[in-house]
Image (cartoon, rainbow, N blue to C red; front, side, top):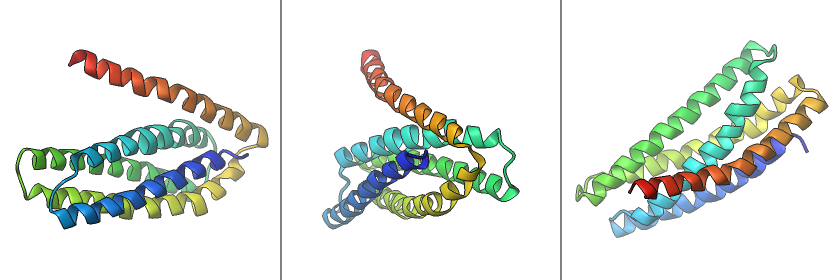
Length: 178
């Protein structure tokens, strides 16, 4: 398997979550109220799975290794654009969390912001994923030898292995401070 394999598998799960978010947008719009439990679950999924786990492998391993190579100006610009898009998604999620809190505090108008932020995410991720799967990943594989790709794949597995421990350590620390 090439390093893009696990990343593309992760993309398929992110796409499934995006479909669920779309369904929930319709439900919340029809009921005219926020589903805070769902928002919390979606935010957890995006922050832990899509961002920390998936984008973490991209930024901390793939992009790091690409940055050490002599890559074309076009590929370098594409990589920087992807990093900026990851930051944009993080910012949008933070705004979603704030809007949910505003709803829970009784600010009815914040529901529109919640729905807008969720919609932005459902529009952002499919195009971001398409560009990575169809353009960036295939175009940048040529910079790596088979051995380098195998080493990167091993580093991906190690990254994933540690992730669950980091996640639940932070949960315990959060509630311990509580």
